Image: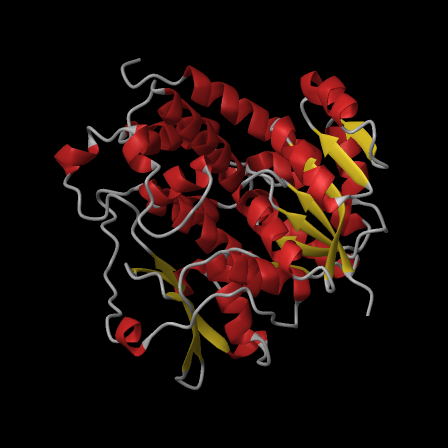
Amino acid sequence: MNPKKITILGSTGSIGTQALDVISRHRDLLSVYALVCHSNVDLLIRQAKEFKPQVVAIANDMQYKHLKKELSGENIEILVGNEAICDIASSYEADTVLSAMVGFAGLAPTVSAMESGRTIALANKETLVVAGELIMQLSRQQMSPIIPVDSEHSAIFQSIHGDKKDAVSHIYLTASGGPFVDYSAEQLEKVTPEQALKHPKWDMGKKVSIDSATLMNKGLEMIEAHWLFGVPPEQIEIAIHRQSIIHSMVGFKDGSVKAQLSLPDMRLPIAYGMLFPHRVDIELPLPSLKDLCQLTFETPRRDLFPCLDLAFESIEIGGTAPCVMNAANEIAVERFLAGNLSFTNIPRLIRDTMESMGSRNISNVAQLKDIDTEARQRSRAWSRHR
């Protein structure tokens, strides 16, 4: 069997680098067709020299000359810009496109890949949060299967595999709780970006780490699960599971529950997403019986972490509301990391932006881009004391 060709959108991020680790261990099964990143040109150069893709692309045109110079001796096509990235994503040369770009930026290339009927290993939450209905329609129309890579959605996908979707009654999304699970309201007022980036269980990028700390990550995952598996939001429950061993559970109409368990390591769902339906050794040990004797579940403290409810509200409102919520959250996280927004003002900014923009029916991706732009502008201008 020839190795499966993979395009990695977001190769220099946390998911992308771990995907390349999996590929390096299984070169008989996987090869790299294309590598794409936003601006981390030095890491992209090292990756290109090691994995020898046919194509590399960088979104930031300021880095193009340096990239081209450093790879001049390699037999690699070098491209720049968002349009080129969409062209790469749509190439029939790749078997699977790993969509791991962070934020709204991942939507357009993911759509391009789906329009070409590529298999999508989906790690970009925002694609389904912003355009879930359009994306699922496109998946069916273009026969472009979506294999979820998020640990929670991979767990659900694995638990449902072999059963019909209409047999599913409930989904239980588990959350580690993040670094502030035991904080008081007073402590949350003083949280710093450095504290928020120290996740107790997972090795993740900055944006996802902050989303985990606010529990917005779990709200985005609820919306994702709704679209991927056709389960109404009111039948999706969130549970704090500090051990991060049960990655999610599925309740069926006959009263049974299935779960996927493993020690926390993103390489497992990444490998499964790229090689589905096959499993490979990633040198991850099984949980011990001692690990399995210490599993606990708690209800999220929604009063202290209101981002979770904002996500539920957005999907209940529908239309463009999730797009507005997502854009506001991205800017809020950006401002928090830059030191000009407090941790507890993140949900306040998001709510005010959602209320000021309302919701409209979704017509196409171009409309969503306009909504995203407007929501970002309002969020950048937001002030708690205006």
